[in-house]
Image (tube, rainbow, N blue to C red; front, side, top):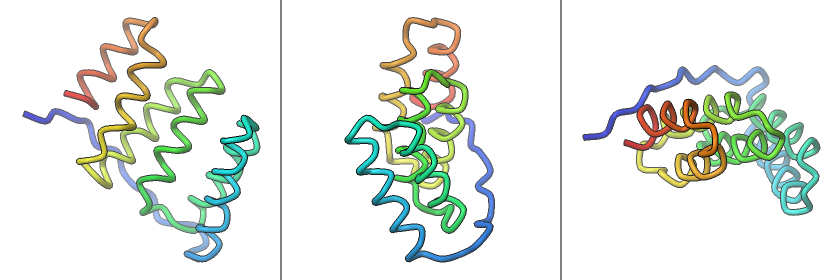
Length: 114
């Protein structure tokens, strides 16, 4: 049985799918280059224009993990899973990276991955 706490998905502030795609691309490039703050800014800008892309939420979750913000990462992971319940990769990423903190890992496993 899938047990997951769903997160509300906000409406885009300035709907524009082309701008969202452009910012996502910039975020992807920054992430690969390990420029995590730049990637965070780009993914956040993408989400200002389109909040329905689960991959952008998941990518921003990964950035938050690398910036040492596991709670923000978990929120974005939950949003990614709310949009696409079959997208398990984001949950495994969160569990793997924050596993040393057993209290957070337990919340992740119970609310996202199980």
